[in-house]
Image (cartoon, rainbow, N blue to C red; front, side):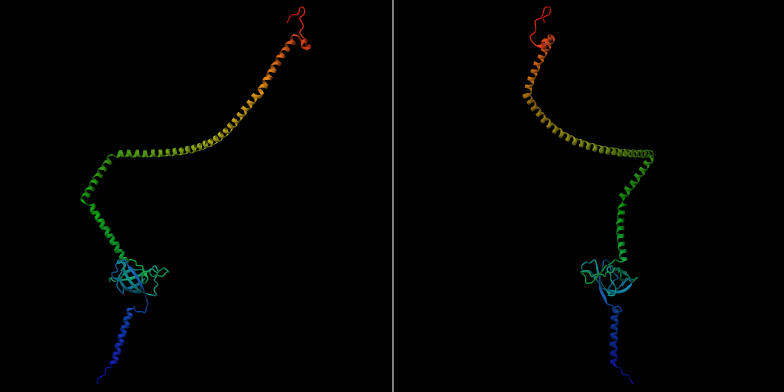
Length: 323
């Protein structure tokens, strides 16, 4: 007896298997969970070799998303524009940065986020579709850049050494060494002379120090003299002020003297006009009085009776002398 195959059941089984396969593929593509993602941008400034789409994004070692797109920035070809999809529940702060990190020895790379200590969330860039996470060059890139700079400097040093070690430079160095040898020998021969020169230089330094001290003392005296001169100038200035005041007073006294002299002249004129004639009369009367007193005295001596009783003088008697 042959068994009959139910093709309806087989077709239903195939459809269910295909749906399960599609659901499993979608689940694997979405990261195995129903997480919601937010887009972010990163602009790398160095090589991103080993990083590709679907590369994982880690935050302190925890898988938080993946790389959605990688392309060269059309505005600045030196930058690589990387679009990330990160779990919405992950806090991306203003100080969060992204760094490319190699993954083992496979040659593949992932993006590692670090930081996030600030309380402020990462703001969206004004000219971008989503927030931009700052990029920090990886340690390998830093080492590579440092090695490149070191190699460039080593090449430059090597070229300079080559130029220094040319034949003409070597000959010049040899002549310099020979001259130094001769100078050293000459110095050894002139040892005593050099010692004397050093002693003279020491004495010269001591004399210079003494001259410096003398100069300082001289300057101090000069400063004192200048102070005294300033004081003397001040006193002379005061004396000149006093002299000007005295001159003003003398001028005032001279004006008063001139006025007094003019008054004296007027008084002398008045005396000449009125007093002198009276004085002349008085002197004449005094002379007349003096003459009369002289005559009276003579009369009194010769004839007292006449002086007392008056009258003419009598004639002398016999035996009397005729006066």
